[in-house]
Amino acid sequence: MHLKRILVSLHALRPLAALALAGLLAGCFGDGKQSTIISDTDSARVILDIYALVTWITLGIFVVVAVLLAYALIRYRAREGQEGQLPRQVHGNTALELIWTIIPALILIFIAVPTWSGIFRASQPPEAETMTVRAVGHQWWWEFEYPEQGITSGNEMFLPVDRPVVVETTSDDVIHSFWVPRLAGKIDSVPGKDNLLWFTPEKTGLYYGQCAEFCGTSHANMRFRVHVVTQERFDEWVANQQRPPAVESAQAQAGEQLFVTKSCISCHQMAGQPLATGVLGPDLSNLPSRTSLAGGMLELSRDNLVEWILRPQEIKPGNFMNVPVPAGEAQAVSQEEAELLAAYLLSEPAEPGAQAEQPAGAAESAGAADGDGELIAEQIITQNGCGACHVIPGVEGTAGTIGPSLEGLSERETIAEGALENTPENMRTWLSNPQAVKPDSVMPNLNLSESQIDTLVEFLSEL
Ligand code: CUA
Image (cartoon, rainbow, N blue to C red; front, top):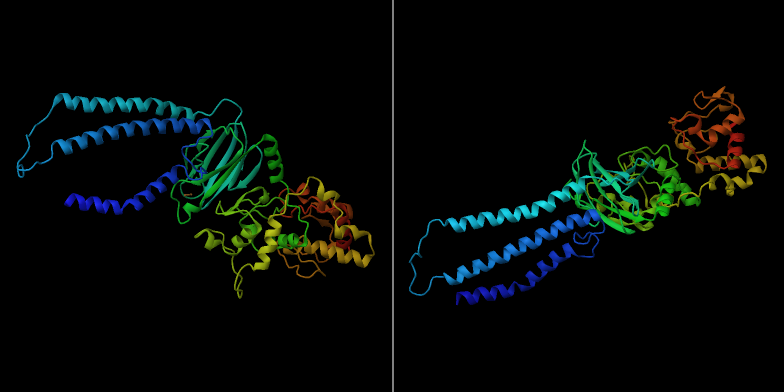
């Protein structure tokens, strides 16, 4: 009677058990994005082989133990009339004890051999020409530095196919763990320590990674992606990382100004924005090359980027993306401003040399009458956000204090913090590439066209 009731209640649990099994299997297979049993590199296969060996051995042990247990339960159960009686008591059996000591010892040795060789394999980078990527964990995003290429990316790593890569990982705050299941085993990112992991990507494609060490509120939201691409695509990506966005539309130009003035630059970096020197958030150069936002939380799209700028805390609780709200204002960034920022951030990288030969709008009419020249100069000044750093007489909204006020500029003897004599020729040298004149200057290279520079030099000479 008792037994029947137990069986009935077990029956009721069946849907639950099926659900649990489905969950378990989804963990292994799922959509395969982060599968531990699909290996796409030698390094991952070494681990999978050991994993499979151990799984089969433990499954064998489980079956033997379960059968013996079932046999003992049935064979030695209390039969009718035996209640209260003790079975025959035995103490010690040397032969049995030897067997159950020696067999597990042999099994452990059997598992240890491939494990040791696997560990040595994993810790010895190949002799072939490797590429190094430094993966720095931050709460809650990844910074990928390419020391040989001199570039940095955030949350998405690009790798050339068939080239061994050494991932040097460390952390900027707490312990994280770098893990791309289909490419390699996981390795902890520990502050003050460089841990190495290497693998050779064999197939092009997109691979999904995840921080695998609990690191705070948004640990589960600390994802990342690895793009394995052809060498050609990789070289192109590297070049694009260094190119400023081609800010063409009026929206994108307004967005760039907001980027400089809305304190984005104190946490982020961006190609073509020497003022963007922040290290708290990811480098945003070449953002359109990525497929995700917010550390893998959102797919990259203009709408999602606007959402992210407006509501970072709702999307990724606890993260440090928190634009300060100016006194007396309800929010830091309005919907409209977020859209302008997105337009700027999603501008494709400028074609090489495009800026120099681009006689766009303002520049085209630069040769027009004097009054026009002034208007155009004001336009260039506004569009390039000069007013975020300088006070420029006659141009509205220029109130910056990072750079010198340009009042009375024409009467000064030198420009560029005393580096150059104040001549029109020097002014044009300075404006075309301030970094070349003074490498540590915070005056950004504005990528102005020749005619834009002409217009500005003319305008500035009259201040
Ligand atoms: Cu970083 Cu968990």
